[in-house]
Image (cartoon, rainbow, N blue to C red; front, top):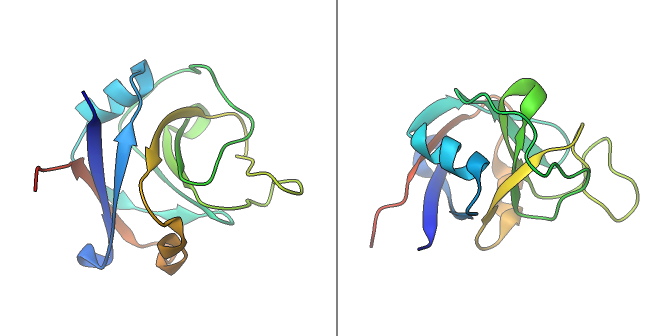
Length: 128
């Protein structure tokens, strides 16, 4: 069964849907929904602390455009859509390894419109 979440910023002006993987990290984050917080940016990464505390689960040092990652040192939900300050040529590199737990569907370039300190809301997706 496909589990999806909805991520919205700027009072609904930027909205994306993401599909979660079937792993412990995704399950723990899904159970914590809804989450409302303020986002920060680090290069082409949006991240924010969430009320979930987990250790590493198959951590990855590099990720793909559109990946959702959980960063254990900061209990942070991360959305990757391009290079970060830690990236080397041709890669997307988090500050340190993350647990990849899902993927954004569709065009991630819209994420460039999300300013630092934007409010973000994550909820389970509702059927159309």
